[in-house]
Image 1 (cartoon, rainbow, N blue to C red):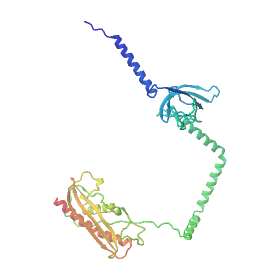
Image 2 (image 1 turned 60 degrees about the horizontal axis):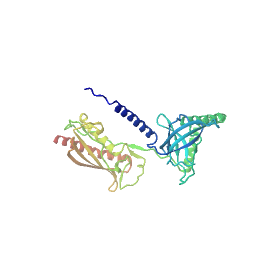
Image 3 (image 1 turned 120 degrees about the vertical axis):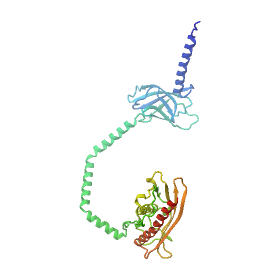
Image 4 (image 1 turned 90 degrees about the vertical axis):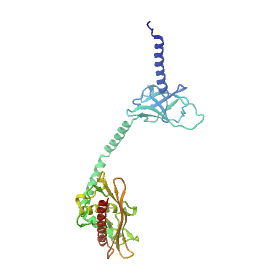
Length: 370
């Protein structure tokens, strides 16, 4: 037996679905409701590029309605009249500001309402006047600004040419009298006692040059990361104990921050010991067999018992699993005669040489024992 299709039911369902879609679209276009609406006339002085019937109307950024009609003002060819229909609960006042905004990447124009006085029972408003230039886009505004600049430059072209010529004459005069000007500045400095600060003098720490014959080679890839230190040691200045200022050290500075300087000279000392199996910087290394972690504790000039360069650091050998294989403290002190930068640097280099030699021997021995 042949089943007859319920054409009436199917047709009714299709019509109902179409009506529902149109109803949903209408609901979206009308800010989510079918409540009471109020119409207002909006007067624009000038063009409203791109504004169309159906364009959104926003109040403080919230959509409240749409444009229902557009037309030219019959009594003023420069004006445009627009009719908007918005929700009746929108607090439109006589001083509500009206403008034209361009939204999205395509610059779709919408009418924007903003603000107004806080009056509980304000008089009924039927006509709103947009601000002058409300329909002017950013491109047009830029064109108008450039047009004004061009007008000003054209009107004052003679004065600008004279000013440029005067600057040229003035700069040529300065170039011819550079030597005299230097003399005048130097005289002013001598008269006022103001002098430019003396240039900084950079000093470097010497690595251990002759660690001795290679005894036990470290035949794996390993690394020395940048040493850790307290904030006071993260500096290029010479440090004193007790802290005080000495002549000549205000202009003296180390070649790098102390932790980086110690790292560089330790690596150089290991290279002088065995260049074929020297350590890498942690930033340059991938997965290494072990790392030598250094913590800088002291790097200062002690004054109380005679000037002496003091270096103190701790070292730990950590394998690739993070296990501490060995650890040790290293200290060295080297006295010098006069508190001057050159003698202090020589003393630091001597003390560091002893520390580096002990670190090399201890690291090689600990690696073999591991």
